[in-house]
Length: 225
Image 1 (spheres, rainbow, N blue to C red):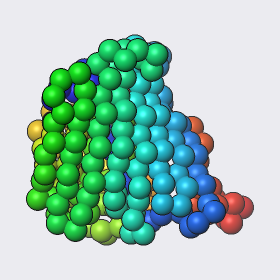
Image 2 (cartoon, rainbow, N blue to C red):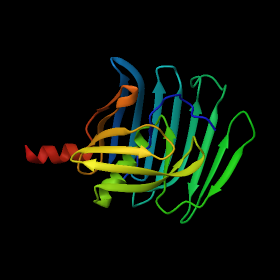
Image 3 (cartoon, rainbow, N blue to C red):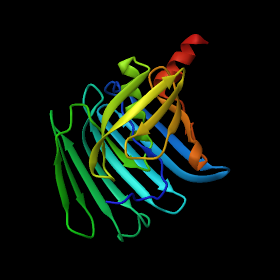
Image 4 (cartoon, rainbow, N blue to C red):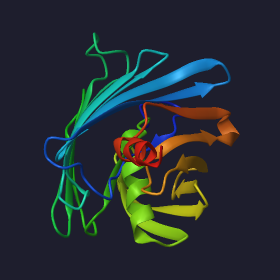
């Protein structure tokens, strides 16, 4: 299964903690190459639900809904990818994944035969989708919660349809992320909880900005004023 956006940054968002019932967090992550905008992702996180929508400058779109467990790991994910825009059914891909205690079931439907696979995925495995940044924040927050300088976490790459490993290395508020099987070294700026505040893919000349402060970070800053 090929990536739906060539050269896209592979990212996924993992929460170390989930907002309490009734709390809602909204934000936007924007990726630029120089002054040109390449991709924008709007997301809403409320209770045990995480919703994200990605649009690229070429019109490609991704929409997903994830169900989160109390510990912030992903229980299931349902995603739609429109390679030629939401108004076109050409190349439309539907990706579904469900996690159990010791495994995961992936199903991909598109113009060809439906792909269905099962993986012996360790508990807490993080699903990642090429082109998504909200499903990297979950990865960063989970790694921050581990409390070590270098953390390795299992990830299920949905565009590669295989189980692999993400290595996260922290230096101060910076986090370097490398996903096995991918050439990119992604660099992110985070807060103490692991919220993604910005980042870059130096090799591709990409810069990532966050619009809107994380709810927990904003609350902490308010208390200090």
